[in-house]
Length: 459
Image (tube, rainbow, N blue to C red; front, top):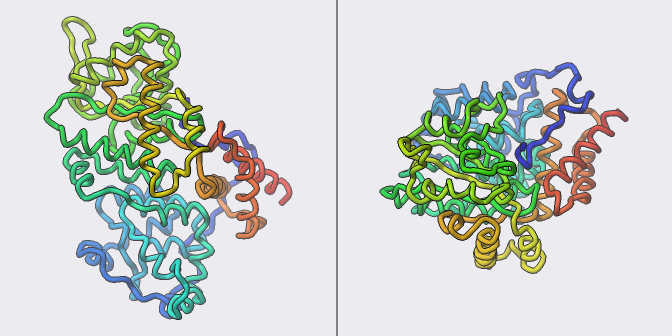
């Protein structure tokens, strides 16, 4: 099963076969003049970011190459800082990326910078939300501010404005358990703010109980197409841990579970060609991620009894003589159980208000009870958190459509002439009009791709 929000445009001949042609971003017109007129650097963020501004231009070469993978590799290695600056005006990497008209992977690059700690205030300083004062008005009229405003498509604007609701205590607990990279998830998953908040609480709480041997177990529940499988697949990559994906629908015995093959593709760096038992044996005593897709649809619920000891004691008996240490394993399950409760709550309550968490906690309790009816209370009682995924708000739908469009443009290797800012906005708005709650992101992906291909055929 593929992740729920992963776009596949490989079946489109026009998108697949178009020859590559990409002008070099280094040939873009200079923006130094507008910088000098409009940009006053914000106070230094940290000593390390200040030191790196003049001595390590590597990040800006990676940005100019229009390769999110190169940017990610450089930032992950520690050879660059996401708040590095360049030039006599100390242009931040985030602003450089936004104002470079030649970048086709701009949305993905901005997400990568933000995930690695880029300070969004560098953008907010130039394009403030409050334009009532004279200084703000002058900034908005500058060429640089205009370039940034044009670059702020709904997806980029969504990620730049996304709040960080993590407390210092939670961050310290995540750091102690080496779970801190999970905080980057908010730059890869659109929507589900409450899921991320409660996941953070659950993982931080588990990390504080590090002397216990029980594994960390999460169940992601709710309607199809709202990010459960996608988020589950990101956990391993964020933690740089090997992962193993099992489709639970055809399993009848505990032995079937141990002998199950992984659904991971061969291009996945965490791909493991053997069965689950061999995977756990190979990574015994070290962190890895096991994803159990559609856990409520097992052919025989007795299969799930194999999870009782791992989830409570951190041990998995493969035979009377062989017991694996699974305490470092992260178990992530997905399920559509109780989706009608999610829709009921979503329609009855405004989940964007200050009281949203209180309502979400009530929904979590109801979903835990429903899941217990489906797979058994003995299993669910050992789960750290049951996290319901909610339908997307209009702003989230708009960000999804914009991000999908950005992916399609990047696949084309050159921005289509017909797709100016106005046309992009119109395409996004028409696509979200076709959002279907029971299909989730898939309905938006389909609508955007259809309109994009129509535009390319008419170009």
